[in-house]
Image 1 (tube, rainbow, N blue to C red):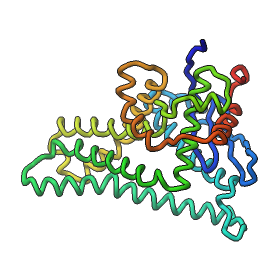
Image 2 (image 1 turned 135 degrees about the horizontal axis):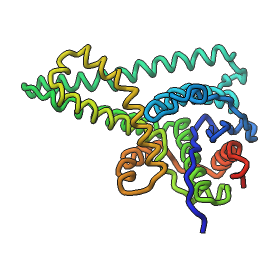
Image 3 (image 1 turned 120 degrees about the vertical axis):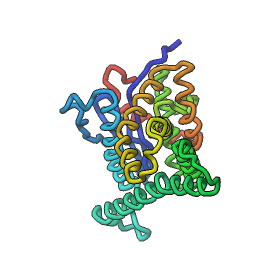
Image 4 (image 1 turned 90 degrees about the vertical axis):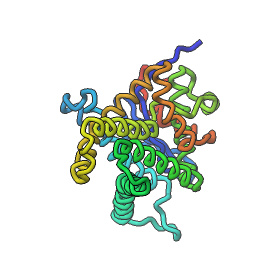
Length: 307
């Protein structure tokens, strides 16, 4: 019987591929439109290696999140280029500058939409509810806005999950989880073995996002209790919420690490919301997708762990 082991290896689903981050190496494996698998190592030097203070608990969560966003964006663009998605209908590939420009504009629009959906809209809905009720219910503001944010996130994930391209990314997401579970179980890394594993993993970015929302509800509610009139000064309240983002991010990261390392009643309760959301953001992969995930994982394994 093989012994279950813990690994810090994590991944990200890409366009027709997967990026895996190991202890010392980061690699992506992408299926080209010819059918062959392209493997490429990415050279990211974590800033915490230069400044040890950035590797301390809480702080490391903020740093890791920022680096993951930046590096993940670069890997996503690279996978689109390798897979052939960036080609135009006439078969000609647009210049890197044009493609990067389109992606940059899309990113800015996504940020603007996120600010509206997750900051402005919940506050607007609560103001409307307060007006309808006709009395002060500010003590419930953080809880109401947090629940609205979670509902918006779930509805958005459901809306995009059946789009053809997004569905394939979610299938690669499932392949990433299954392959990591296969390795942690000490099994030979084959599509057959990986296919038998669970596709919901407690150390997932999806779980991290939902945990950040839950932590934000708790911190904002606590502030409302301690300073009951602070929300009435809208500019100050918004500023405080922005300043709390690094703390919320750091706490969410630490919770994810704990849930990924330990399996007990408490960690299962903490992981539950994220695991439920992963039922939307992960889909059952095909054998060829598992092959991609295995290729990426093997590329980043330390020599003593390679099978």
